[in-house]
Amino acid sequence: MFMSHVRRTTRPLNDFQVFKGHTEQTMKAFGGPVMAHHEAQLLVRDDQKRSGQNSAAIYAIHRRSENRILQIFPASKTACLPIAA
Image 1 (cartoon, rainbow, N blue to C red):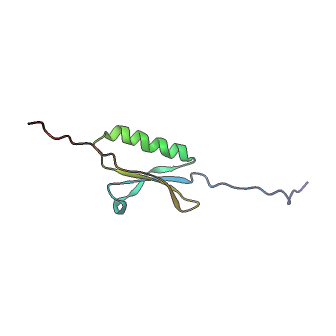
Image 2: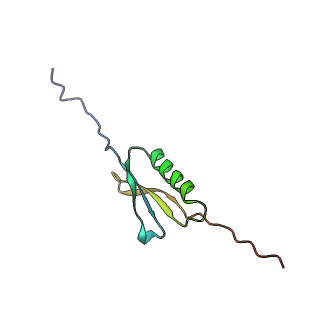
Image 3: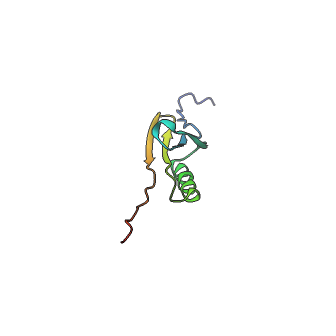
């Protein structure tokens, strides 16, 4: 039986890409494309932990099928306290 009336929706595999850089102009693809948004978030959080708090990297999660940025992780900022006299 041929089922030509059945409509199958397709989702692109590995649709999410993480970008990393010190500024918006220097951002480059980080790691390979992943299948889900939460996997991309895990890549970012793992790299942030490895880099430490002094890292000034900006991360962005890009959805390739829609060609748009879904989430931006700003650079971590460290507070500098004044020296007590």
